[in-house]
Amino acid sequence: MGKYQRVGIKYEDGVIVEMDMCRRLCMTDKIILTPPHPGNKRGSLWTDVKVSQREWVADFEFRVTGPEHGGGNLQLWYTKEGRPGIGTSSVYTVEKFEGLVLVIDMYGGQAGSIRGFLNDGTTDFKNHHHLESLAFGHCDYSYRNLGRPSKIQLKQDSSGFEVNVDGNPCFRSDKVLLPSENYFGITAASSDTPDSFEIYKFVLSTTPTYAREEPRRVPPPPASQQQQEQQPDLSQDVPPPTEQVIPSAPQQQSTVDLTALQDQLNSASASLSTLSSTLVSRLDSLSALVATAERQRVLDGRLAALENQLGELKQTIALAGKDTGGKFEEMHAKIGERHDALLEGLQERVGHLLTAGGKQRSRGFLILMVVLVQVGGLAGYWYYRKRRDGGVKKYL
Image 1 (cartoon, one colour):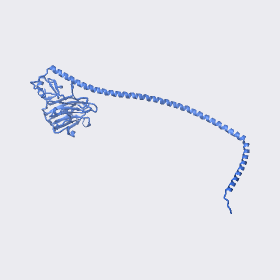
Image 2: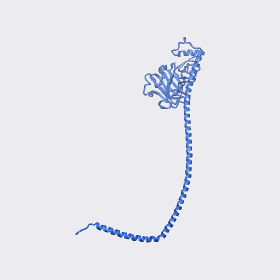
Image 3: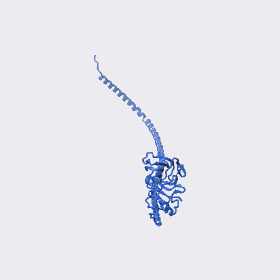
Image 4: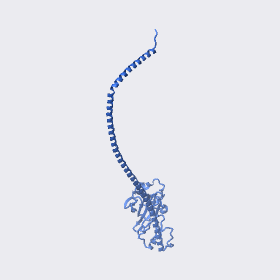
């Protein structure tokens, strides 16, 4: 059976005794590098074993979930420095390193992309002004909110280096041959509006008889065999095998149960926090909708009352118009009758007056004419004397 080692996790007799503290949350079937809340978080997983072969195949499964405008980046490293030199850095914050980094992010505002970068230890990525120009290969890949893990495969053999995504080619190069004695690692970083990066699988196969794989997916070897195989892979801080004190099985099992319970509680707390925020947001939205509906109902009632009042006013105006028209016609008829009666009475009165006093008027008119002639003669004489006496006298 081949040799298996999970990144960032050390095993003894099939029991977890130490875990890389760079990780965020450990679930039963995945590791959450950056949680869905809060944002601006980092996480990483690194192997403690160098790759001694130059031909290998690395299978990597991950999933990214988040809100509509969420962001972050995920890196798969194959470097000489390993965790001490890279830590939780991203391709945008790392300085100098030797090896390969595969970057998965929303570069250029697209739906997603996968880019490969190489460095020989002389280029400072953090302070480089045109980092995108250093990519030796890339492809577009929409990886967010797919509802399933995405599968990436890195392969290096005598023909070159290639990257496949979900069974489809992404990019390859026959001019790239990475050295051995490097470490594999995974880092992730989230933005203010965070994406959650979840790691489901990382399997490194070198030859049919030598492979590194997740122990959760492959049954562990017997206790004696696994101790013999994994003793050289422990960190330098672990005492030599002859001096190591291994806890008893019940004590190890109790430690594992407590660790798993704590991880599950942390995950449940994060999920409850996210659910609480979502419920508060939904309740606020529903309250706003109810208030809007209530205001709309009140406005509809007022409009209906106003329409009823307008209808009644129209009916009143129409009835008043009919009554006023009839009264005007009646008044006009009465005025016409009075006018006709007045004309007839006036004509009769004038005729009577002219007939009764005709003789008296002719005698008075004659006397008036005689008086007017006498007065006119006296006035003419008086005017003549006045002109004669007021004129200029001439003497010879």
